[in-house]
Image 1 (cartoon, rainbow, N blue to C red):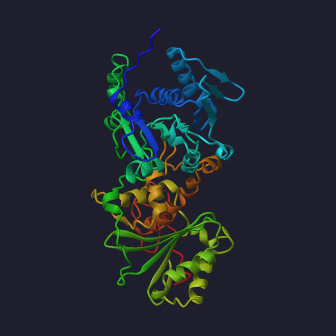
Image 2 (cartoon, rainbow, N blue to C red):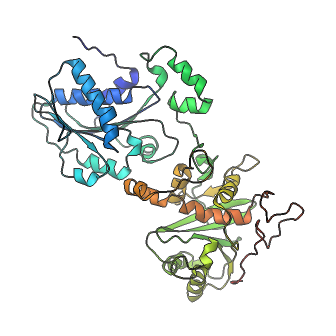
Image 3 (cartoon, rainbow, N blue to C red):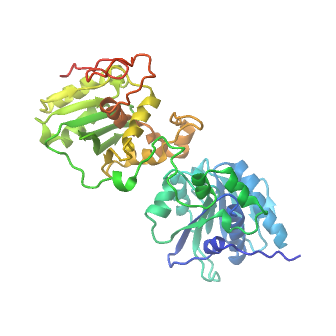
Length: 457
């Protein structure tokens, strides 16, 4: 039986290496039905046959995904090719007559893979895998090549669906690709082997933006699943933002202990300028205030307004947070301090509405501008998701943090800055019980009717 295949243009690009780097790192980013798993498993088999004795690893975040999708496709290819192989089920390993072997492993415990010496690595659903696991697997590409392996290069290749967030794959393969990194975009429309009418079915089923991303494979700024809407990175990340000495300095804080987030901001002409970010793990309010005192040592007589989490007035970390800030800054010679926080925090959905109303205002112009030093805030803007079918931010589970340590930083940076945004630029809504339509919002009261705390004035 003859098993002939015809590679699509994107698949051919995936197979071939067009650079001189000793390691090839490639991701195949394809729409639905673009043949991601099909071509990844075929490439793994080709490497196992071409380089006798090579050791490869195929990984996915969970073993059921690996077994039901990737391993199934490997076996299907091998059987159609008529190749001899042995699958050791107790070891989850394919063995070939030429002594090549391919290991199939889930990636939930990557530390168990640190002893491997590999010739190639394949990653199924690459976007599900943490950056730390990806970099660890790169370090496992250290199998010594046999002398007869002609034109051999270590390879790490993966495949993924288009992503609406801007995670590590976007950073490594799109934004700042290094030598040897390749991203292959594979539109579903390129696959001429799909059933007749399949593309038309997708086109009729999806809105235009969803179709362009998940079928055409385009890089679109789809923020439908993200907390932050309408962010324009080219306009709103501004290098060279500095303190304007004619304006008060705002400190706005989220007092979560791990991490604690502080931002130095200024407000002018209806805009918020986020100038500096301090994000610290396992710290205290007093320690963080000492760092801020050092940063602002040249502004000890300058007006400094302290904003942030209203719960800082309660015992949420190791004491009354705003008292710690006040006392620390006074000890360090700051003498022009004002506290301005809401009596209680608004609901998260209202606060996010205020945030997005400033990210892109009713005039369709941005009103929040961020210094590129604020990397955790930018990461939140591009990756913090909402619960499906709601406008509430998605809860960050301990298991997600275990798989992706950066997930620990989701939520708190936006919280810190949105406390300030919500305070100075509230959305004037009438749906809250405490807000009566015949009353104007006083500058001394928040939208819930709570007086601002002025104990530090």
